[in-house]
Length: 339
Image 1 (cartoon, rainbow, N blue to C red):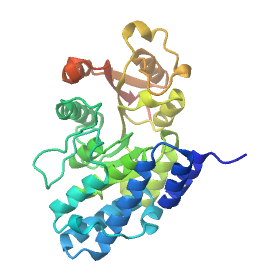
Image 2 (cartoon, one colour):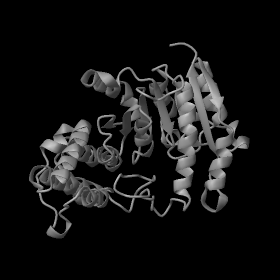
Image 3 (cartoon, rainbow, N blue to C red):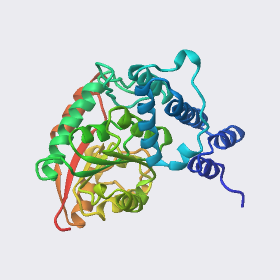
């Protein structure tokens, strides 16, 4: 049986052969061609700047980015072919380098407000499907998330190891690191995990954020590997699953991968409307569909978790949604009754 083209693409990505990956994408008309080409260009330009930039600040920043990305896959960095940016884009300062990185990573596609030391305001999400109040939305969400996680971690996030599952652009990973946590950031999208690693480096947080590419079902293997390589990132203290679980096709398998750690888990998700919760069937769940908060609560309690619902979040999310509307949002903190 011929190997699935998507599997071939993933194999080329993990081997750092982005040209071959792009050729497979083009030959089979697969989505994501731009993402793969952008990744190859990003690594090539950054590698060149790390070795050849005349501005020491730029060289140091590029080296920090490569260090962060190498944590995701050393082969990506080792196999990148250094190539200079066009002459008009060669950065001569950290400000110019940060701008180049934002552009190289796709400045039209962010989900979250990203802050960099070189800009006064956050880089706003500007996808067509992101509400105009997105900065306020995520700021309010982070304020609540931080309070709940500090409660779960004994009052402070300082030196706690937090897994940020489905980290996307890295907004929560960076916010957690700035609050003193050591963060294992995980996502299944190449561009997203590169953004998280790069933004961590640009904010000087790359030693506090370990970004990894992979599915939730491989969480145990990823956490064990990181802990063996970097003992400061083990054991983990808590897990964040923000805006994540309604994307799972195999809901119970992915939840089991989180629950087996017996640490506090913070969930935030699109929830089924209350009249629909009685008919919710996890075996029929598909990406993306709302999840029954009642079913999840019972599932967690059956596995000896105390479940605390944050009732204020649904109203806050609705008020900050586009045109005052948003899917029903739930935020639950699950605390293990025994380790």
